[in-house]
Image 1 (cartoon, rainbow, N blue to C red):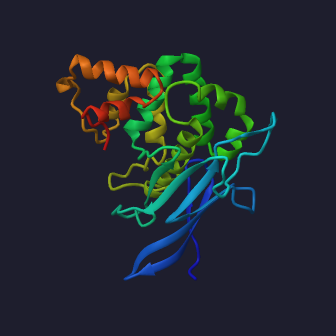
Image 2: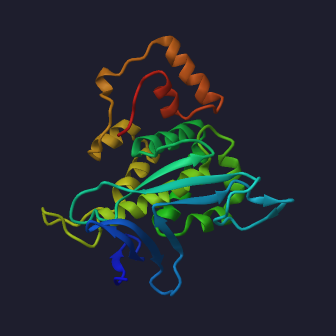
Image 3: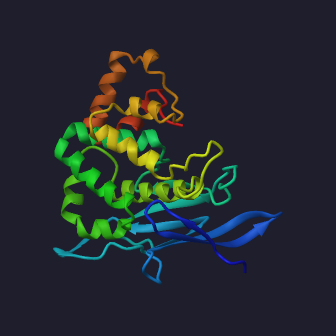
Length: 267
């Protein structure tokens, strides 16, 4: 078995990537282990392709329990699928795609996650600020499981507002941050001589929206692909009412409600 490939993440942690299977000289399966600089055991570990399972329940008879990966059970779970991506380029051999399967079907794009955050921020500014603090924790390298275990009261409070289960949201974002650090290594320079951004591009989207920027403006400033021209955006009043009702009743997030009436947002 070849030696693990090492990548330095934006957090300063070290990613050790082990190739598990190749076919026609192309990587089919690999394992990612994230190590804190000063520790020997990985704090985050997963394989691609694979599925990750996390519990929906974080309380047991009124007592806090540890939030950690589990096998599916009757108590309900979060199911996330990781698949090998099709990314091409100098650092894209370990690209992977993330899809949420439970408690709902959800393909995370920058736009969808950002609009979910924006919906809650507009619903309750304090809730939005709480979410941003959790996002900051992930950005700086704290594993999602640790963040959720230590902030369970806040998690329960956030989950009472419109949007997807915040535990699934945070895990998806953690995986996306890792993916971006692998695809755009922050310690490497691109063809223009500038260092790659890694997870900074995504984190800055949330920071800008938290500070008052509209999601579409933040996405366009970041030069991310979106399927919406704000100058041509239109929706009839009946569809608008349906969107508002679904979001208010927590049946859909903003992106899902718009897509149900035929308006696609996000790449």
